[in-house]
Length: 198
Image (cartoon, rainbow, N blue to C red; front, top):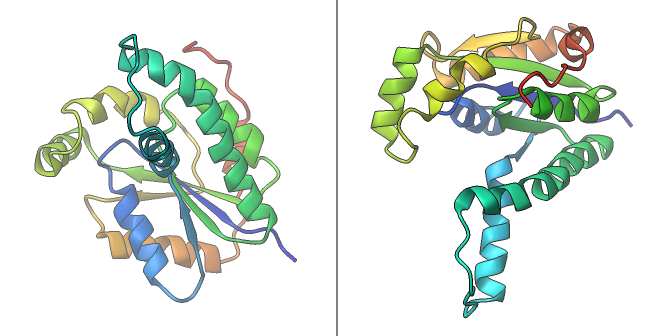
């Protein structure tokens, strides 16, 4: 049995990753499962709220402190689940934001020996600003803050521009690439990063 394909969509917040994911899941040619970090962190919050509904902390923690405590353990479970699905022969769409060298290296170490199609989901700065305002559910300026870091990679297997193509057209472009039997080699070419931003 072959390992499942991992389609790794990397793009800034509001670039259109989730819309492409929904289109990939709707098509009937290749079955995909969607693994999003937000689902893992959200499920943890739901677990705490449902299991301990009357919990009353005696100290108030800053959101950053909570994030520092929880981020690495939740990320580890997230990464392990991506690997598990692929090892079980299940195809996975991972829509993510690789915004620093540490996060890239974690993905690199995880995916190096798995069939991974690295897709850059591109959108201009102006386009991201407009989308953030329209969405209303993201902190304004978040995408621009991420922009240079997220789009610092010189190597993708495939790039899709969500200002030029609709989500359905982006999904079709990805499917055509998969069906072309081209090698997925971007991760092997990129190699680990030097953790310059730590």
